[in-house]
Image (spheres, rainbow, N blue to C red):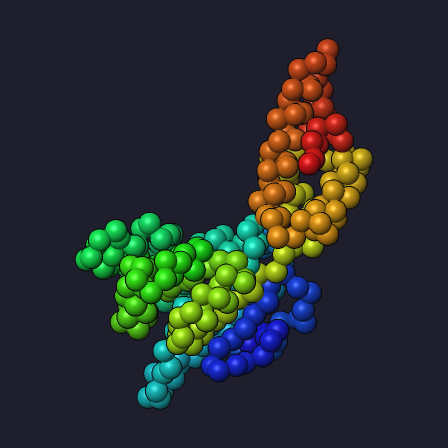
Length: 306
């Protein structure tokens, strides 16, 4: 397993978006014919549009390989080891946590790990009630809806923000119970800011040990953000002029230096691009004639950066 911080207390700690070593030696699988795509190649294709995430891709390949080998072990009368896939995602906004969770739901269904492969996103208001008995009812309803798929709870630390007497503690206890009871047909992913997640885990002893995968989503580099922006523009059939690209590069470099606590990574780049497209539209309406190149190029003038 690709590890950035090592194997500790039965957990796998993975850091995403960093330049790490190449994939480790892949498990041997049945040789594919030319007409049949390797399952490992399918995973590569599913994540081809993702910038970075090399360690995540390696981890998914290893999970699939383990499932395949478990089937082989059963065929030979050997004990199989059940995969527990509950995860913790730590990262700032816009680093891909929700997008990756959605993709995992589909992949785990394709791997026959999850029976439905749907994605359920929940927050505190979906789980925690205002009076005695309501929290259990709401939390069980969300869990029931998530069976067969991935239950994703962003800003999970909000469940314990009210102290010992808060009903959020009851929601956490119910989630922990169903993590064990439904482990073979539900994956629970808790996500949030790194510091807040660490504090949340400290306040709930024993919770962290129930998550065998801890994924740290690092902030993107300037080059990665420009790559993401280029892909977003390409999907919309736009591109930046050279001057606009340099303006954006310099701006992102400054944002990463000065505003690390509030910077929203890929989400910020998306907002900049969408604003630039609107500004281009306004600018083009002032032209006498509009050519096809005019419709494609976003200029330095179109980039309004704060």
